[in-house]
Length: 291
Image 1 (cartoon, rainbow, N blue to C red):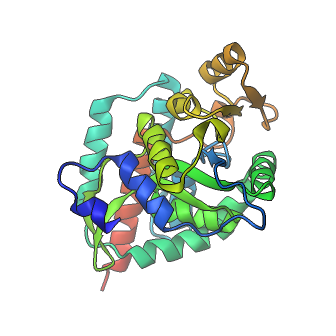
Image 2: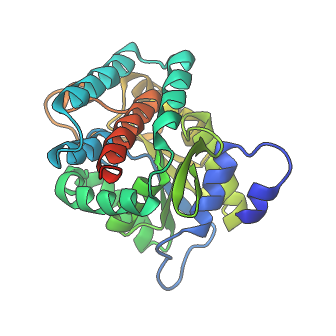
């Protein structure tokens, strides 16, 4: 990965995520592995009910590090982006710039430690059993399984480790000496960037994408789903459900009662994930820099 960062020219979010994922894999397949096939799972509303970064913010709120008013504002913001069905690039850019103003100086180890605690307290019970079983099926077949998400890589890696998966591809923030600098390396791992990350990881790991599988709930992930030989729609939004029907993709819906947009807390889109990062960064900054 160091060679990648030293390379001349810009480093894309997908290239960086692929490099980090390959370098930080936490589990390898058992005996008789299938070395050229793998599975890629989106996180929010695919592997987990609701937004992982929102649940992280909830955990911070439970510790008095985040106000209820801020939490409500974040939830309303996510609902807005979900209902509109698309993301405004200007809003994403604005949210990203705001996040950078607060993330500088935070310790990576503090974020990871809180992520471990909050996963056990808030997230573990929100994993979809059906999706987890699908992931386990790939592991049992000797295939590697990766999460692919706009969630920060540190939190994504915690989730992957807790689920016993191979690793994660997530948004990468720059660090120096274990402290966040306030800059992103590349950009958000969202939409087409996810497909780029999967492609980059496949090159590094020698995967045959036509033998690989991908799972998501959102039409935003069509670039990633269209990249592999076996695409699956999990708890799909209307656009993805229709696309899956037209292309003969498997559909699994583990929801009951209301539609996903009405279940519990709103789902994070790219801009929502950034907003969650801002919230978490502000809360952490207040806590870990207090005298």
